[in-house]
Length: 141
Image (cartoon, rainbow, N blue to C red; front, top):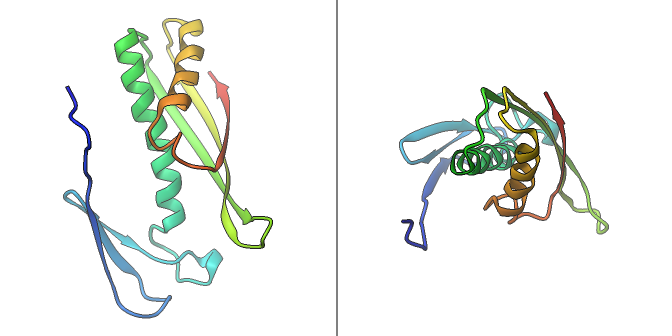
């Protein structure tokens, strides 16, 4: 049984200047980060936008896998490709406007259950339901 609240911690260290990369860490993982080229940074490292998209994408995968296992939905593989669109809102400020996911799940034991679990995943994924960003998807085979 899971006891709430559950806490996660992260840290980062950086020098001044938007062209200078920094190091972020969580758990036992350290990653190199940088402002992306699209925002006049050096790029070539993980950006906050990359982490945002990865968090949403991995929330979908992790939540779906839990629901599939508890529902006894068997599948061979899940492939997910996502695209984040950063745009300006009505006030002209940039924000995470939309994400489109291309979901391919092969070797599914029950197509009807698959569709139910995908909907349940979007409704219950912690990160998926915590953001304002519009999420759309296509389901392939």
